[in-house]
Structures are given as C-alpha cells and as structure tokens.
Image 1 (cartoon, rainbow, N blue to C red):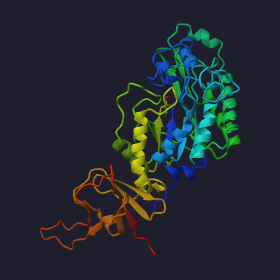
Image 2 (image 1 turned 90 degrees about the horizontal axis):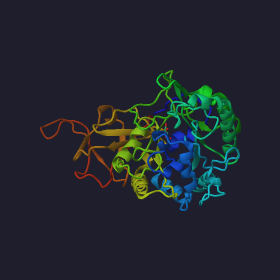
Image 3 (image 1 turned 135 degrees about the vertical axis):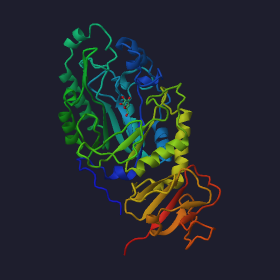
Image 4 (image 1 turned 135 degrees about the horizontal axis):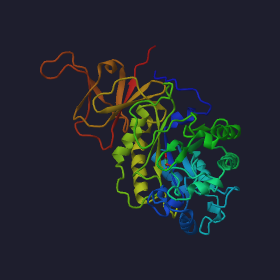
Length: 434
Ligand code: GLC
C-alpha cells in the first residue's frame, strides 16, 4: 500500500492531494498589452504610462460561469485566481485602494470580479483559491527594488525616502483580511514571491520575508481561516511547495529532506497573462503527460489560463482544456486519489497507484506494438488487467519456457494498433494480502 508520510503542516491538504488537478487563472490589466504579465517590468513602464490600461479595462465578455464549466469539463477540481498580481491592480473591491476593477469605467465598474469568480466556481463544485502578489508595482509605499519598473530611474534613492515598506506590509494584511472575511471559504492562498539579496550594480535590494512581515501576514490568514493551504513563497515554509514551469522527476522535499505536498504550476504557452503572439503552445499530449508525470511523483498540477482583456478564454486555451477533458473523461481514475507507485514502470511508461494500493495505472507513452513486458516484481501481483478507457480485458502471457517463440517473459497482450486515446492507460487490479 503506497502510504507516504509528508511533512506535517497546518493547512488541510487531504482534499488537495486527492484532487490533483487545478486551474490557475492570471487575469489583470496586463491582458490589454497582451505581451506578458511582466510587461510593466520588462519594458520599464512608468506608473503614469501604465495608467492607460486601467483607463481601457473593459471586460465586457466576462462570464466566470463559462470558465468554471471549462475547468470542470477539463477534469479540474479547484482553481486559483489572481486577486492582485505584481502590477498591483486589484480584481476585487478592496476598501484599501482605488486601483481596483470596481473603480474602472468599463464593464467592471462597480463589480467585484473575484467575488463573481468564486461564486461561479463554487457553483460548479470546484474549490476556490486566491493568488495574492507580495510584489506591488503600484503601491506608493512599496520600496523600489531590483524588480520594480522604476528601477532604472536616477532618482530612486530619493523616491524611496518617502516610501514606508511597513505601511505596505500593513496594506497586505488588510487586504488578506478582506479576502479571507468577505469571500466565504477560501481553500488556498497563493502568495508570490520572494527574491532576497542585494544587487551590487544597481545598489538595490530584493525582498523577502522580513519585508513582507511574513510571519504576521500568515498569522493574519490563519486566524481567519485556519485550514487554508498557504504556499511557501513568502520565504516561510507552509503547506505547499510550488515548482514553476519545470517538471520535477521526483517527489519534492523540504530543506530537511522530508517529503512535502507539492504542486507544479505550468502555462499553456510560456506567459501566465494572456499573450496574443506567443507561438509556443504545448500540445495536448505534452499537457496530458505533464499531469501524469506530476501525479506519478506524488504532486498536483495547476495549469494556467490567461483570459483575454474582454474576459473570455481564447480558442487556444479552450481547445487545450477540451483535449485534457477528453482524456480525463475516460482516464481520470488514474489521477484522482492516486499517487506515486512503489513499483518499477515498464519501458516507456509512467505509473500511478490508488492511495489504497488496490489499483495500479500504467500510462503508455510509447505504444509498443502487441506486447508490453511486465517487470518481474509486478508480474506476480496482478489479479486482473484492463484498459481504463473502455474496461476491455487485457490478457497476460506467462510463457513457461522459451522455445524460440517467446522470450519467457511475462507480458500484457495488447492490440497491435494503439487505441484512439492520446495516452492509453492499463488499469491493474493488484492482489491484496489476505
Ligand atoms: C512567478 C511570476 C509570475 C507568475 C507566477 C506563477 O514567479 O512572477 O508572473 O504569477 O510565478 O507561478
């Protein structure tokens, strides 16, 4: 039985490690320039010039029920949406700033977009999380640092004299209090991110837990929603480890070597915010493999969409989600409630195993013609095997001896033509000890 002990943490991760697959949503003013959510940094856009996106924000086609339906159809069980990204613009009706959606003049005027998202996703039965940027390129007290869009100005040190980072830290606590008071049960709080250290060339600092007053910030959150899952990007380890834009090939560990609850976050194309011109969209096969590879190492996958400035998911995002959904419709059993297996995988395969150790899932990455060799340790444990997508029995050859007709190895007898499933899965019922 694959029971893995992970580091004990304060939040409730039981549902999370069962559900395995969620939707990340990066939506903010950066959807208008549509060339990366870091555009303000990348192009060193000064606050007064970035203002035009605030003035033009008009999400007239925003209908989070459509997003929620698309997420659910893709097989996702939870979502995390940007309440505020590094640009500082709030997608919720905060009492502590005017730089918020409800204060714009377009379709979002007077509305709390985050609240609408939370209601729509809950209505589809999905759990709801909020991403909250520790970085804020708009707040007047946020000390200009190595990443700030104003970092190249000559008068930074003068400008910084009037900035009081402690006031900004209080602002974050106030907003987190709003988010965890007025929005019902929030399952995940996803802070982003720390970059401590000093840059010699610019003579500017990065920021880390002391700048965020992270201990207090976390305490504020826990006092309001004790079971909430908090990530580790404040620079204080909490419930969740978050490898970004790469696929770990083993279970993630904390600094003491304990296994942890982890979640890979990945984009469809590179940018998190809507990026019109990006051509590096991942194929359905890669996306499906990412999900399988993640669960095969005991993790979750948070797959990102960047809605357009008008508020809808563009056709590429919809197509990608639909492809995931088509696979998940028939194969989700190898994902939900599954984790890393202790068995060695057959060639070109990835394994997951149900938490209760009764079923093993063999994901076939390179279809082998009509035989799949079964590693010896597994061969004696198989009670019954079938394709997961159609429950068709898969027979097992157990040749006693080789007479030139076979190699004497135990193998699954597969159809010679690959079934019409991007990644076919063999579901194995494992013999249980009496
Ligand atoms: C980052 C980026 C960012 C994105 C995030 C998602 O560190 O700054 O734009 O929101 O990670 O993991």
